Amino acid sequence: MRRFGKKLVATAAAATMVLGLAACGGSGSGSGGATEAAGGGATEATEAAASGGGDGKVIEVGIINNDPNESGYRTANDKDLKAMFGDGNSTTNGYHAQYAYSLKNDEQIAAAQKFIQDGVDYLLLSAADTSGWDGVLKDAQAAGVQVILFDRTIDADPSLYAASIVSDMDKEGEQAANWLKDQNLSEYNIIHLQGVMGSAAQQGRSGALDTLAKENGWNIVTQQTAEWNAEKAQQIVQSVIDAGTSFNVIYAENDDMAKGAVAALDKANISHGVGKDVVVIGFDCNKWALEELLNQNWNYDGQCNPFQAKYIDEVIKTLESGGTPAEKTIIMEEKGFDATTIKQEDVDNYGI
Image 1 (cartoon, rainbow, N blue to C red):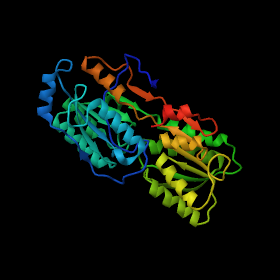
Image 2 (cartoon, helix red, strand yellow):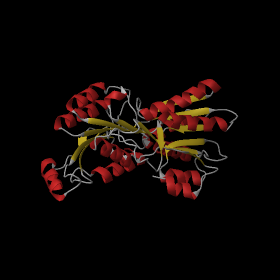
Image 3 (cartoon, one colour):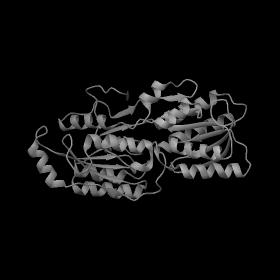
């Protein structure tokens, strides 16, 4: 397993597949039905072949992802994919793409089956839930459709997909939880705001906090899913405040939920950030969130890298040439940022 940041070794490759779920999610759009943007198929393919592009072949891809409006992370991820594979209405870089967006596993599975029936060459998947994908992957394999996982992992036999270009969600959670432990607070009373339950991002970030809380006797005041949504997070934190329960840490599994939590703190005139009453932890590294760190209003933000498209493209090119990806799994390089050490260049370089 190799880690990749801004550089990808020329021989590395991985097949493209995307299942939409709030991976490093942000402000949730609720459940969101599966919607497809499948532009002009045969006509565009013919035009693309006539206009050139390698051997004239147009590569058909079906991309399953979360609603782009679900979070800043997802907006950046969707934009990155469309820059490489097109917006569904035209052929770009030799690709013609269809898109399906949903936060529900069953809707994503239905969309994947349709893409397979449509005869796409590659299925790119960012799954809403880690389980339930074996049937789809076996159907894809039987139909000769290459599956590439992006953004997050699933629970499936690796022989059923060509490549996996993902974040290490367990490591993201471990970095944040270990950072919190290193703060040596006199007591730990934690509001834990979880993402969509069952997603790889939620499992990795929740698991790390749960482990250290048990090992160190930390008090989890409340542990609830806000489904990546700022408003839901604000309501949860407000209910804790209204109940008069003591807390001094907000552990939010994405930036938008952290923002909602802080809105509740501000409404109650509770201070937060460096040297203040409440420690605030988020994930995703939206530029505005890193600016909150820079201003020391938050304390920690864990990066989730949304820019996977160029690596997927490298994998597809390798497969199209008859080669085998040098790495089955490509782990995106990601950092964690502390409000006491972050610099403006970090905001500029890593903010999404």
